[in-house]
Structures are given as structure tokens and as C-alpha cells.
Length: 195
Image (cartoon, rainbow, N blue to C red):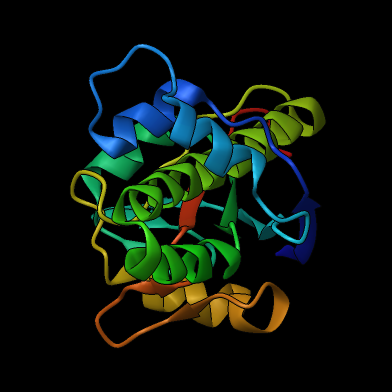
């Protein structure tokens, strides 16, 4: 294993189409209220990522990921021809949760926009991190998260035990496997050139 390491992404590029998608909105451009919410984001909001690199090996019934084993056929297919993975946890931080709670009382519409912006923000953090991985390691596989296909959500427990994101980036896992802050992602990225 190499890591864990931490990176910060203060203002990732946020895809406006993603904001609209998360809001369930049929609009083609962001409404004025959404633009105002986006412009009002506090400077203190920053995405953070904790990650580590592992060697992986095929098993007769799945994969040895270096930090855990899995029988997921979908992940095995995604990681075909990879000898290493990057395991990561990313969060947009508690700022979005606080904004949503505040605006649920003041303006439910603004709360919806902050929910959607937060979801798009953490996707922007993941995209920026994965772009960095491509620069550092060459070609990579698309990220794959617990809950995708047949990869069980219970893998979260091993991910959190390994990366200790609560210590490094303030991200915790509840008994129900929900993460806090809510705008957070865990994922595995295959390295096709060995890292």
C-alpha cells in the first residue's frame, strides 16, 4: 500500500447540467435562484480526498483488492488488465449540509438548489481527482463505487477502516452505511499501467 494521502480541491469545476439533473429540473440553463445560490457559496467550502494505492490479484471467486476481497463480477470486469487500484474517499465537507438545513426553514427551493449544487460539487471533486490520477498514472478505469452493480455497499466498512477518512477529511460512516457529510463519495479506480 502507498498512502493514505490527502488532497484539497477548493473550487472544482461544477457542471451546470449535473446541478439541473440532481434537481430533477427540465430546464436547459440554471434558473436565477440557482445561480445566486452558486455565487453565494462560502469560500470555506472545499472538496477533500483521502486515497491510497494497492496491488490487486485475481482470486478464483473474485478479487483481492489489497485492503479487502470481493466476489463482485462487475468490479472484476471494470478492473480487467489492472494490477493496481487507487482507493479513495472524497467529500464536499459539512458546508453543504449546513446550507441545506438552514434553507429548509428559510426557502425550500434554495435548499433544493444547495442539495443539487452539493451533489454536483462532490462529482466535480471526484472528476478533478480522477483527472490528476490520469496525469500521474496514465490511463485509468472509470471509478467504481460500493453499490454499483454487484459490488456490495457493505464494502464501505472496509474502505473506512482502511482509509480512516474520519481522521483525514472529517468523513464518517453510520451504522446504516450513510456517510456524513452527505455530499461524499467512496470509489475504486483501476490503474492500467501499474502505477
